[in-house]
Amino acid sequence: MYPARSRLILALSLLLFATVSFAERADHDQPINLEADSVIVDDARQSSTFTGNVHLSQGSLLITGEKIVVEQDKEGFMQVSAYGKPASFRQKREGMEGYVEGYGESIEYDSHAETILLHIQARLKRDLDEVTGEHITYSAKTEIFQVNGDEAVPENTTPRRVRAILQPKPREDAPPPRGIVPSSDLIKPSE
Image (cartoon, rainbow, N blue to C red; front, top):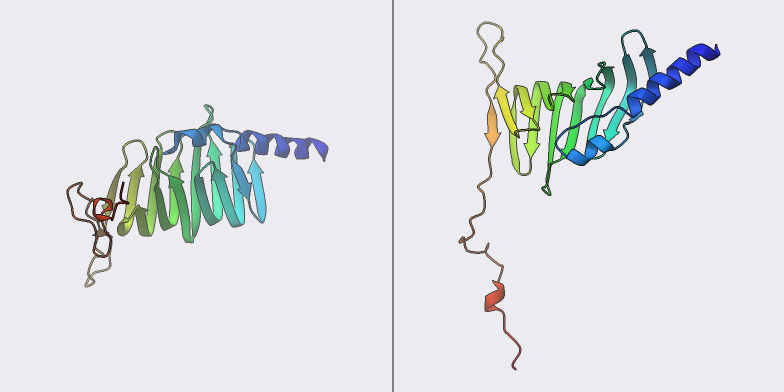
């Protein structure tokens, strides 16, 4: 009984302290925390399956789902597969104020390649921009995402299309929004 329990504790310890890098570079120095209703650890395959309202966090990275499978390779990199209706991820962007967040019925996270794949009714938000499609691939290294509609649809149905909402970037010479008085127009106290 004790040897199996000690292997479980060892496996979870290795999993919790594995090195991961993603968009926020400081995240990889943080411990990985997992919460779930239950877990099955497979030492031979270096994988753990967490079920029931699962939360995986590491620094600013948060992945949630009803089921999350974590596999670790010999170098300590992780492959995370999350499933839910929807599963989600969120992480702070490197050197910026905003977050990237995504949703889908399944999410695949590769800590070595620093990529997130969102599948089935996928949605990705970055600041005020948002894209939707059936499959989204996001690279945290390059901050490039690729979105595909549903190509495998039944005959006589319209394929789902990619949709995007892209906000214009503010120009430095643009006038302030209505109702806001520029600081140069404020009444200055007399000297």
